[in-house]
Picture 1 (spheres, rainbow, N blue to C red):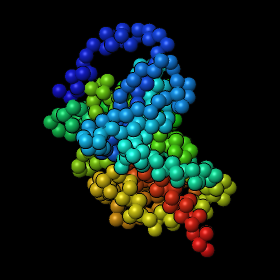
Picture 2: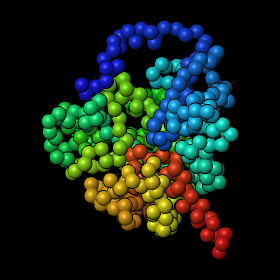
Picture 3: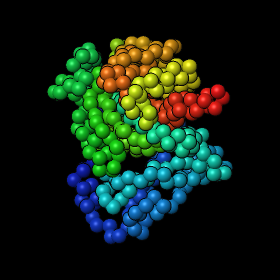
Picture 4: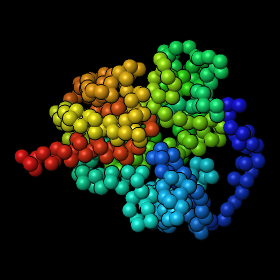
Length: 370
């Protein structure tokens, strides 16, 4: 069976129970990143009334030994609320709460990259760093095979699927449109979506976001994607190379600019940032996927609209480069650049933190030394 059993349960009955009044009480679902650095976990509690501010959400805890984040003998981990969204599944007044994870000693868990990223963003906030991230993903059946692909073969070669329309070109659009609406309802800064080059592969974009907000909104958008797919009985995979062979992989292209880059003559600041990124290529590769570059090694081959993982490159309108300067930016002499190296399963906090350190803090450190 290509869809999950739970997705076949009667949704009419579900709607009846979800429509029941709940008085003044509010359901609050805490969401956090688990010990894999890729997976998301969640659990729900009742508050006596709807929270109006993040400060109205109490800290909570969970069993870290069941999420690969602690030993059983000392397993309690702290959930620290950091961002609040409307809940598109149980509806107003209920909330989704993205949380940081702290260990028993109140220090960040190993996969809590937000903590350090936020420190970096506080240091550079006067530069007003903007980000936009393009999250690619692949829809899979419960058998692990791309959703909608022939069971005993392959679909036609790549070409007609990118931004395609029609039953023979777009697989799973219902999921994409439901996820888009869920993000809008929740208050996520989703700005677009499209079918990707490989059939059953899609992309949504989040941004522009300033500073730490980029990671907060992308992680919650991922949570909504997994929850919507759960309702439909399929799986959203962030594997950067889900199918071997002549098929595109999946990335999380990251667009970046500072106030200086967006201003008149900003292209010179973009070029300086690219020079700094070139010198730190291998360092960035190590943080652009959760496994130190091993996932991206399968994807960044120099083929299928990627650069080679072994070298750094940049160019205007070049989708085979590490860094792409959009053609319009080249014409306007200001704007932003796109880092095409991050993998689909990257931690956005790690990515935007690395870009910011290299492009802004490194520049400041060099100026101090000179």
